[in-house]
Structure formats: structure tokens, C-alpha cells
Image (cartoon, rainbow, N blue to C red):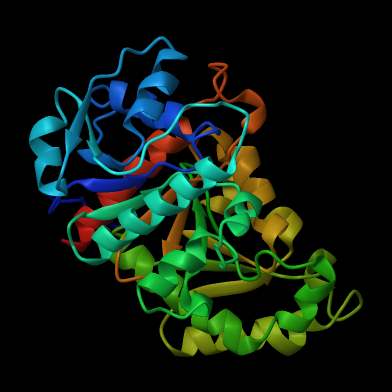
Length: 339
């Protein structure tokens, strides 16, 4: 499979702080400290300079911070210090989320998104947030994905979540809904529309010249010819047929319990799954410490580490920085391929 290499970036990445009481700040600091060994592109954090310094010290990192007024200054500063846009700040309180911290997280996300939409940043990386805390301070979106999509003028239904790691790329076609609702939400149009977005993004952002999509079934054994459910026959197989008519290399529906073996994964570039856990369980089993949440279908590149705030271990030096590092690297690679 031909894969295009990334080129130079047009500017730094913008990273939102995430909830300052969570593990986001310390992992951003750890990523900067490993910038050379991990070959990370230049990035700047939106706000929270003192929080970042304190979080870094909890991991034994003496973090030099360079306050910047514009993202244009991030590239020159990055080699010697972590560039931080001079915005809001606050006290570091690991494991103790607060209203002030949620306001800082929301402000950082808004400014990072705004500047990326305006083209000041090459891509957006969002730190982990607590959705319930954000809701308390007026955040009225289901999550950061929907917020960024709205800021880009994209319908939330056309912003597709992909979870990507070294061993697997998986897309849940329905996301944060009760399992009982999934059969009522699945339609041929939903599968086809999102598969098109995935195929396009694999080409433009991941450099896959001819993407291969594997489509999961919903039911055990992919329904076994209707014995365990007929969604495969009524909805999924017709969607696959339509995609193939359009020239997209799609196959399925496959029994979900056999789709994620090492041999099966060699046959596709992304797995499209019918519901949240069908995609996230194999991804987190295979690539937990390197999993990246990528939003497809946007006019900008947005990634996020595939983990939450982990308030229970914040400030204890236990959080693995692998997913944050992978999110930064992937954002840079995808943005560079877009040119």
C-alpha cells in the first residue's frame, strides 16, 4: 500500500490545556521535554503557564516557558522553551477540579480552535477535559469534537471520530448513545456518508493511496444470515455494495469477533464499527498508550490523546505520555500531508 510522506508544516500546532486538574498539563510538559527524541513538530500551548510549570515539576521536569503574544513566535521559541500564549492562568490543583479550572479549559479550547480556524496554527491538539465540569460553566456541546466541528461550520454528523494507533484505526459509526439506541440509528446513508469521509481522510491526512475499509456487522456472527438479527442484510450489506459501486474499496459486513486479529488487520486500513465499544475496546486493548482521537471531515486537522483527565493519578507521575506524544506527532504529520 503506497503511503505518502509528510512535508514541512506551515506553522506551529496549537494545544489546548485541557482541565488543569487532570493529567493534560503534565503530559504536555513531558512531550515538550521529549521533543527532540520523539521528533515532535513545534507547538504552543494556549494559556496556563504557571500550571504547566508546576505540573512539570511533579514529574521532575524543570520546564522553561516562553510567554508569547502571537503563535508566529512559537517556532523560534520552541527549541529552548515551551511557548505559551499569554492568556488565562491559575493555580495548579491536581485531582481537584474546580469551576475556575473548567473556565480555563473552556477558554483555552476556544482560543486554540479560533486561531487554528484562522490559519495561525497548522493543526489543533486538544487536551483532555471533563465534560460534566465544562457543562457547569456553559459549554453546551456533547464534547470537544462537536465544538470544533461547529467552529468550522461543519455539521456535527459530518465530523467523524477515528481512533488511531500503530496497530489499528477504528471508527465508531454511532458514538455516545445507549446501546439500545444503536439499531434505531443505523442507516445505509449513515454508513455510506461516514465511510466516504473516512476514505477521503485516509488519502489526504494519512497518505493512503487506495484506502481499504472493513465494515463490521452489528450482531453476533454478523447476523448469521438473519438468525441473530437482520441489520446486516437490510442496512450494512447494501451500504457496502453502494460504496463499492462508487469505487471505494469496502468489504463486509464481517463478524466483529474476528475482525481484529493480527491477520485480519493486514487486510484493511480502517475498521468501521457499528457502536462505541465495538471500536474502542480493540483499539484500547492494542494501542492504549498510543491511541489518538482524530476528527475526520473538518477543514483543519484536530487530534486528541485517547484518554480522559484521570484526576485520580494527576500529579503523581504515573500517567503515560505516549498518547499525548502520538497525538502531537499525528497532528503534525496529517497537517503536513495536507500542505
